[in-house]
Image (cartoon, rainbow over all chains, first blue to last red):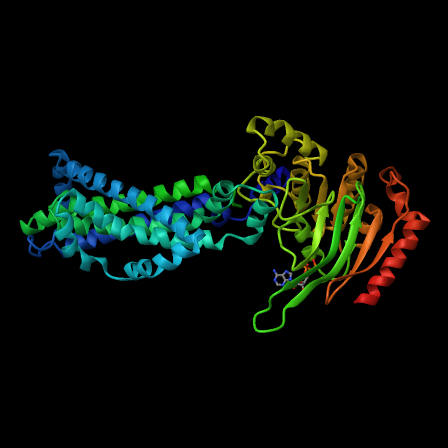
Length: 273
Length: 256
Ligand SMILES: Nc1ncnc2c1ncn2[C@@H]1O[C@H](COP(=O)(O)OP(=O)(O)O)[C@@H](O)[C@H]1O
Ligand SMILES: [Mg+2]
């Protein structure tokens, strides 16, 4: 180990332009390229839209000012909290249901045979079509939003969990059998860790779909949260202000994806790097 | 009464759209307590299948296995299995893999630490308990597998080509350790190998199997006195070793 580290350090100091081989420098240069492109893009947008109708198109500088205003008057924060509390609750419920149902289907053939057609059909269909009917049953309030988020998010979790559970390597199950592990131990120590990466990728898909569901629900049921801000400011032709919640949604979706990845990495430490 | 007796054991695997495949055909074998039996034979002759049935991982089509006269109906803590490959759970550390077997046997968690340390030390892996399998070499992984089987203190150990995937040097080192280990403990051992050397070094009797269908062709006693571990490299120069090695070679050559 030490020897090889030493060797690579030597080869670096031995000359030849180190720039290209230095990964840190390479990364910094790539970042710079990305930031430069973003600045250029915003500048082009700013100039191109300068003479356009302000009611229809907002320029970046206006959006920045509008975002600042909405931050100061607390509107953005309260809308974000409203949306997120609904989303997180819906997502957590969908995850729990998805994992439990997925485990049941993956380990019990009868359960799988019964549920499989519905799950596949519901996963494939455009669930938005169900929303008006759903509102007849659960109204337009909090419950409706939670229901819609669960409906959008639960199926990828189920399907991925089933795949992971059913794929468990026979060699690992044999270890459990040879040493007479209880059913609970087999679930906990063999099937669950094996299925974890599958579940995690299901959760990532569910995250994306759940955010879409949240916004759609805020558009179509009682208008509220970040989706509500977008609708209300668009209807009021305050286009710059409508962009602020869009930005927040984009940031949140990305932050949550990173969070799920981190959790997955934490549980996947045993894997070869 | 033999420690283990295998009577008229037959195993057929169903083959889709054809006649079933006979992996074992009328296998009979008695193993005395403390005996070291090695199984050799061309691949596909049913060595793994035989071991798996004795462990209870597979059920026989017909025939019977008895341990101390009692019929075997499934897996048991009286037998410890060492797998050829994929024998460790990759998401558990070496110590946790051993703990898995201890927990499965119902040993309270408070006693795991002590047992784990002891068996890891026995296989020469003191201090490696918190390594994950991928952080260990192939030879070390197999040692953990052996340590885990030892941890549950089985009466019979079953090892399916435990050194099959290792390089020649590691393999020879582990063979010598195995010799020392088994001679100290005096457990009943069933050991599958494709190496004639390994079989003659380690075993009291070598069972030669032939394929299609899997049968016992011959049982060759190895009369090299024990303890053999102390002989070291000289073991391989003893006349008995040379003669038995030659005899088994010739027999196996006839089979392939
Ligand atoms: N689960 C199984 N299904 C079908 N055939 C099998 C199965 N396991 C083993 N066999 C067949 O049984 C025969 C004996 O296999 P095995 O016991 O693995 O032999 P060995 O360990 O001596 O190489 C082989 O022909 C193999 O293909
Ligand atoms: Mg085999």
